[in-house]
Image (cartoon, rainbow, N blue to C red; front, side, top):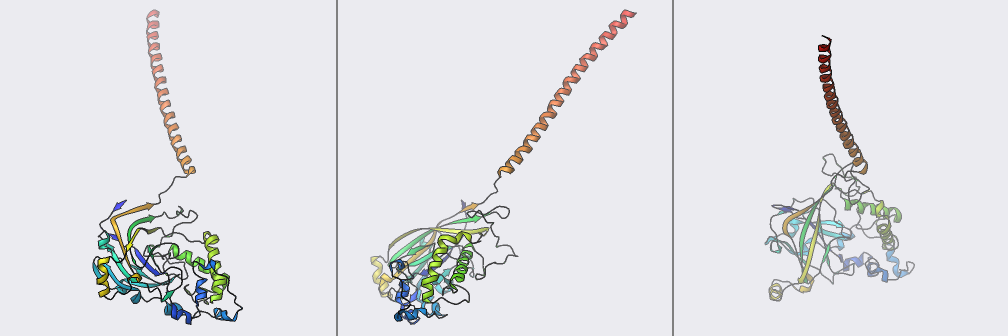
Length: 387
């Protein structure tokens, strides 16, 4: 655990889980029946009969600007943003980005100057007030907001990670951060021990990805899945990057979605996607309370907030200025251990032999000295007797 004077704020990506404007989506042949078959309750629906004349529109493709025409606009999605009790212009700090859920918005993204904070607690949080127009937008079963905290150079994993913020409630997210450091070659990176980490900080590094300018593990995995579905279905989702043919609603329901599910269940391990050698991960301890409080209701109505059940308050902050370091360290392998032990034994035996030889040499010298003395005494006695 390390205590710092200030911490870099996480990148915060926010998505509306019902992102499509209902009136425009219908014009684009993305009918309610089609959307029901692509949301989380689609398993409860019967298979569409594509030979029926009433479903002929499902064979028509989405227009290339479908997402742009039907998704939320930043200015309509965010009502107000506050940082450290100061009003900020949301569009100065949030950047639209295409994700698997359509257009989402990222705070402190890779193209922005890093936001640092030396303040802690929810009173100095990044606070957003968001309006979810339940009757105007559709796609999934929820009318919630998805929030993902991530490294600013990591593509957000919108489908698998993050937490939900619910309209009509205040959501408080106390953030904890971990700095991950993996060793480069010849050490394999954790938790995927079959690969080596990739050092994206090297001046000579260029991203091996085709659709993402910056390399990250999540971007690599998304691209791997997209390449698989494109091969199998001969088309791409309207939210996928690239210039390939966009799947028709029929192709999306009959091929793209089941192939995506199969890939996620069976084939993810086949992707060659190493982790970056150094990155940050963030977790959040989330709590909620009803929004707004009773004494604030009249004031908000006077400020033009109508139907307060459609508004959500989200506060993101650090509880303290500590972060954890998760560092991979070299591990002595069994052969290295035996090799080192062999050297130690060799040195020990050598020193022991030398010591024994010195002792033996001393004993021999002592015996020879005594023998020589005895010889001299005998010589004197014999010589005196001869005289």
